[in-house]
Image (cartoon, rainbow, N blue to C red; front, side):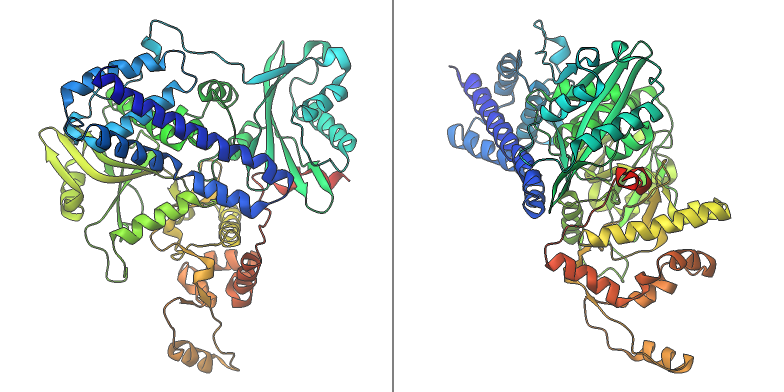
Length: 574
């Protein structure tokens, strides 16, 4: 084995170790669910986020031990890549192994070496002489053989849950009723229906999701069956989701990654993309826990989009941030966030704190209320795609994070998020009815975050966005803390307005003290908007409410937060 092949061998072995450990911790999710061990599940989910970087660093250590003088020989790495491509033929995780190779190389070399001769900027998988491996990730069922109810029972039985169902016959009956009521395919008899069910279960938080589709002569009907665990009695099917919007929300960018075991991720993603055609490859890889592959796919999507468009990057709409400089490409549904060189005086922390808080959210349960972020280093973007005003503002506010190299703008550290309409701007344009609905959802967003041990800190409306599904999502993490790190206090009770004003101005506040009553004026100066919020969520003004949530967290209680409306749940029917 020559030197180049030995280097390639070390990298592919590093990847195999990573994927083996990744699969092992992912496989624990089923047992955690069956035992209702929610805290252990959350620990696994958080820990898994760091697995990739740990294995990349281990591989770098091995390379430097074996090749201390040759690691930075570019000519050698041209050969390394060719040997590595040979390892990828028929490899069941070839696209992930490409990304792993890129990560190792980019840790060793500076940015000028990041091109397709050295790394996989473009995937080689569709150019290989031999076909990529093909695997069936789903099982087909035919109701014509045994009947619809028996077929659904077979589907549930195929997952071999160790915990029994409370009343599976009742649940199956409700699934059948809802499928007929919701599906446009219900007119077909069972002789014209096939069910394709993914053999991998999607675990997240306190739920297990069965994902599949019904196929008829009219086409396909995707669906999701959420299975929950009543800790005292057993399992039950909670609802049936067939609405594309609801399914998209379940797989949304504001939720924790699924724990889903699969040996051939590309096949799983291909199936999901048929069910959720509006989701990109990047989004689908990320939502099944392969967030590093999601980054790779997103970067390829961005490069392709830049080639196909001609609009310019501009400052993102909304109030200027005191910590982040935010810009966007108007025709591309994302924002680009860079930490400013200097923060406003009220922000008594530094760059490292901001990065740590974004990582905190990355590893935490985002409960559908906190946007996922893609974090990049040394991103090169064409200079001619930046508006003059934006480029001038960038050089003033983030000079320490960018440099101009010929026709490129190089950003040293960058976060990318889905673009949403800032909540304060949404409210300016919304009707009275829309304002009522969205402020109710803002209150629900706050409650769901604090139930998950996240105190958002700065709860100004400008720090929240409205998604295309009219859901309120938080996206500004520079003041995020754990709920248990905050001391919630109430102002002294007084008998009259003058005493109350005096008390509020003279109460001594220590670091970490928060007075929920201040939300009435802090969140928005508009009395109407404030009234819409606190008429539905008055308890947010009470320190006792926040303390009760802290007590739940200390006791290890994981609250139920559903990614679909309560009125869809089956329990209403029994």
